[in-house]
Amino acid sequence: MPTYLDHNATTHLDPRVLEAMLPYLSGPSANASSLHRYGRIARDAVEQARVQVAQLVGCEAKEVVWTSGGTEANNLALKGATASETASRVLYGATDHPAVMEAAESLAQAGWRVEAIAVDTNGVFDFAALEAQLADGPLRLVSAMRANNETGVIQDVARVAQLAHAKGALMHVDAVQAVGKIAVDILELDADLLSLSAHKIYGPKGSGALVVRSHVDLRPIQHGGAQERGLRGGTENVAAIVGFGAAAELARLELEERAAHVQVLRQRLEAGLRTRPDTLIFGGNAREHLPNTLQFAIAGWDGEALLMALDRKGFAVSSGSACASGSGEPSHVLLAMGHDRVTAKGAIRASFGKDNVPGDVDGFLAALSQIVASA
Ligand SMILES: Cc1ncc(COP(=O)(O)O)c(C=O)c1O
Image (cartoon, rainbow, N blue to C red; front, side, top):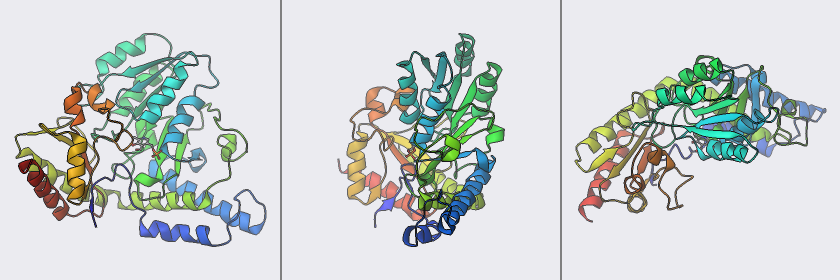
């Protein structure tokens, strides 16, 4: 079995989550909107999951809107929160996920002013630049990720929210990578909208949610059914939603244990890499990172070439993000942090999960040394 060090791309389904899902995959499978008893069983399961997801982020169950994942949640946030408004301005983080950046860019075609919030060399927001930007005209929405999928750098989104709210704007937080790794409380973050995805927390792929606080005027971007209070039409994927609920509950109950476990592995990797003079750690001086994520480059190595060599030795990692890999383009995150294209193309991301062990780190460091030495 290869050693899997790519948990920010996706996680495997926790067997306990699978067990919770099985009755809804193999039993009589009803539409949660049907009025008969089977429909009511499905509805109850969907509503129980809504409570479990709400408890993970400290919102009310009725504020959880099911989506097909983080990408749809981000699209619904940006497009849905601007749909009722005459075009003004939207800001998003320069290192945000493409699902935010491209949703924002699509608003530009509808006449919105869309601007990126700059980051410094550590990938952290430049608040002086942001304050100047905020002063420059009307604003409807600010979108920012809590934790970066590539570097693991954590942003002070509560501070961004405070500034956005002072301008009368809404705050959307992409918390897809943060949940399950660090505590996420929507009230502490002061977010109006919050995106989540099940497959990053040992739940099923293709399941996510947008938390929509009750004061937000959000319009649907998909029409055709009254599900989700009319905000997201379509027959619910009951088994996937049940899986998301179960994964959310486990993530809440096991958060501290999981975070402490992966933190040790990350520190072990960082210590090993810091003994190599040819290694650059991206965002290495940021004040806060996810406990499980470390992105680095080895001088003279292309990230994808190194990734494939590591793959041959049985280690599964990413170069940058899984979404951008294979495109041949350097990571927009690293470019936004001021790295040149060659350095950015050297990126390798290791992201640990709850089932990794210290030996995985030692094996990885040894494989890396062998590859570099034999080149
Ligand atoms: C920060 C962030 N936002 C959104 C997404 C998209 O989530 P999904 O894969 O569920 O569409 C990802 C996935 O990698 C992500 O890392």
